[in-house]
Amino acid sequence: MNGGRISHSLPDHIDAEADVVVIGAGACGLVAALRARAAGAEVMVLERDVSPSGSTSMSSGFVPAPATRFQRAIGVEDDTPERFEADIMAKSKGKSVASLTQLAAQAIGPALEWLADMHGLEWIVLDDFLYPGHSRHRMHAVPEKTGAALEARLLAAVEAAEIPVVTEAHVTALYADAEDRITAVEITRPDGAREVLGCKALVLACNGFGGNAALVREHIPEIAEGLYYGHQGNTGDALIWGETLGARIDHLSGYQGHGSLAHPHGILISWALMMEGGIQVNADGVRFSNEHGGYSEQAVNVLAQPGGIAWNIYDARLHAFAQGFPDYQEAMAAGAIREAADVGELAWVTGLPETALSVTLTEVARFQSGKADDPFGRNFTGKPALLAPFHAVKVTGALFHTQGGLKIDDQARVVRDDGTPFANLFAGGGAACGVSGPDVSGYLSGNGLLTAIGFGFVAGHAAGTSVVSG
Image 1: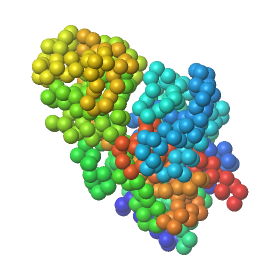
Image 2: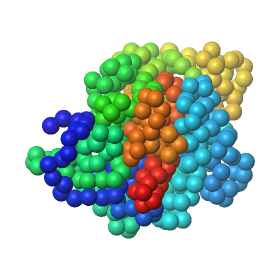
Image 3: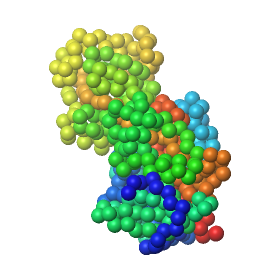
Image 4: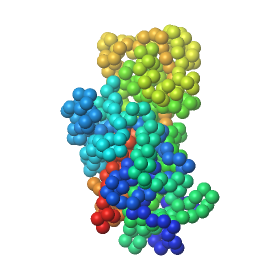
């Protein structure tokens, strides 16, 4: 039985019921479940995998949020939702959906503080560098600084709240009445057994369609040949259900890419290396772009190079700095990081042409000293020059997750083409249209977890209060 089916007939039986059913146990679904439970609703989370992980565990775990007490604790006093909203809009060149951008910027700070106050999540603010496009230090993380740790802490909170998370429960159909009010969901177990769960409200938190190669080719052909570094379960079920119901769909061409995935190891190499002074060269040993443009659009730039690969080149200072990121430590352990005493050895360990590599590094030194301007428009003067010994890692471009999806209103209710909301259907995270606009270049660092947690926070509260008050 295929996912994405809508039935307007009554189910032949109901095996169990909950006030609010949440599909997906990533950050969006878990936050939505916590909020719905806090509103007094009986909640059940359905997860297709054996154990919840999804895109959240695969992410860096960094969440941008303005005007939080965690920022103020490190001296960031002047950040506001309006400033954050302006940064999001600047990155997308004004193409983000304005209402969703405002909703996300307003919701995310209260969401993180609520998770801390009510569920004990600890947040730190990363202040050693500014992520591309952010005008203030606002990137929050749990102390471990990984997406897996964020997922684990949210799961612990859900368990403490006594919210059941039913695993190996692939939702394969939704039941709706004549007014398109969702009345039940069908799940299919690995052995083919079928169960039907009744509900009064449904939250779609099952991410986007990055794991559906046919949909990626249809809507985002420019990245279709790139690696998919996301959860394979993100097959577009929410999108298909929404289209069947007549929901409004926006920005399906938007996505988060990344131009720094260690190859062939498949390990994320933090873009902080580029922001702090590193460069990327292609197989000819030459730079090909402004590395400060953003790691998302850099995926396309890297894939356009010979063989679809690039090399991150940096020095011992940045190598030491990067070791503060768990992913980088994993890359070191996997043997992805090369070390060289000088340019000649760097050429040998990478297979890059020594003459071209030497010319490139000499040019970068001139840019850094202010003696010449970078033709790609990057300003090198604010960071120290690259000095031997050098380090390098071979990388490729990848699709991380899609950013388009179901349009929602200010209560995270899915809306129809005419703008009217469905009575009890909510969405967040990758299932909903995000705030990155229709292009890869519109992705501002952290936009994925921003809408996962921010929209999940709104959707859970609205779903919970609607069933309790109704």
